[in-house]
Amino acid sequence: MTEITTFPLLSLLIFSPLAGAALIWFFHKPETVRLIALLTSTASLFISLLILISFDNTNSSFQFIDKISWIPTLNINYLIGIDGISILFLPLSCLLFAGVIIGSWTSISSLPRLYYSLLLFLLSAILGIFSALDTMLFFLFWEMTLIPLYFLISLWGVGPNRRYAAVKYTLFMLTSGVALLFAFVILAFAHARGDVPAQLSFDYLQLLTTAISADTQTTIFFLLLFGFGAKAALFPFHTWLPTVAMEGPASIAAIMTGLKLGLYGFIRFIVPLTPQASQNFHWLLAGLGVIGILYGAIVAMNQSNLRRMLAYSSISHAGLVLLGIAAFNMQGIQGAVYQLLNFTVIAGGIYILSGFLHHRTGSTDTISLGGVATTMPLLASFFFLFGLATMGIPGTNGFIAEHLILISALQSHTGAGLAALAGMVLSASYFLVIYKRAFLGPCINPVITSAIDLRPRELAITLLLAGLILFTGLYPGGILEITKAASETWLLRLKG
Image 1 (cartoon, rainbow, N blue to C red):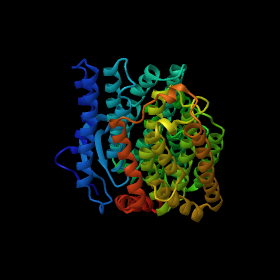
Image 2: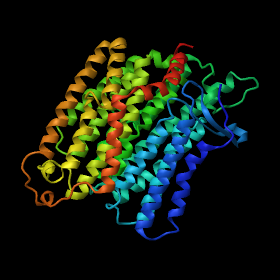
Image 3: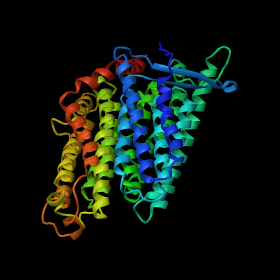
Image 4: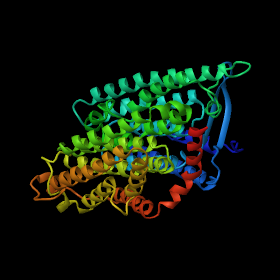
């Protein structure tokens, strides 16, 4: 069952960033443009919190449903709604974008109106992805992210090959998008075969109840696996992420690593829509997870650049989430969702900090750094805290998620669970080594000697993110309670 609301609060949330993006073009002063962008993201955060406050944790069905006929001849609708799995991504996405805007406050000097309007356009598309309940509407929002990301990477990237990175990412996503489109069309026709009279359906809620043959499920499973796997930067579709992390702006890397939309697609679409195929190929999901964990961790150990190390660390942690999904138990799915939420705070936050560092020093390579903690103790301290969270140290939210996933993996795939444990050990190794080189020791670079520490606005967003890391690490019950009912329903679909 679903609940249909009278006031379209969720639609207001999705489209409010577009209104801010349009408003930006009526002003010319960079200070005003930045302020409008920040106020827009803050207003979106406020709306998302209103939705969260009104959300019923005990109800496993989708809430805040909005439905409008869009393309009647194909039975395609504007259909949005949220459940316990997707609800928390809304405020965290808005918070991350607010952090990205603050992080870009002094580093964006060229074409600020275009930059901030593209950021808000991207925020609107991402909020739509987390809310869409019509597969064609989801696909529209999914493809809408390509436009702003291409220009954000190619125009404001920090590397000499930023245009190559933008093209590489776009080609990866366009190719994987074709697989998603084919999968959604096959799903619609599969529904039509079982419907009397035959009628196509792109309605996610209807597709959940559609009986699909085993062979068709297998086809859809592999199409979705490629489509979402490329976006999630799973091995071997991961090569675009280190390139974008090095060549693109740190703010965009924060969004790409902080919001793992591909892994969200695994949870929302692959397993619920192809339950039989997902269980038949659970070994493949677990295997890809293990490969990602170990490959990402081992390659991260050999990096001398903070941003590249963080990119491979993200690949390793993405494998851990996939392993939690493949466990098909309560601890696994709740741990996977928890870790995806953590990405927004931890990975997004640490990339924002690396952007602060790059803007001050012109580099994030350990050869050019050293002694950062001497002149920028606040930045160094917070970077270390965020790093502890990526390592899953007790007291941080990373520990809760990794602990749940590890227990679930040991129950369902013992060997994979041991591999995950090894990956957690390796993550401590590569982070502590590169942190020592970059932040400790003597201060040799004169640029670092004269660098200033975090400014008040930078400190404010960093404190907020750090507070979330500690609060959700010490009190995980709130998040687990919100995701519980929807996670139980998610598991029931595997049995039904």
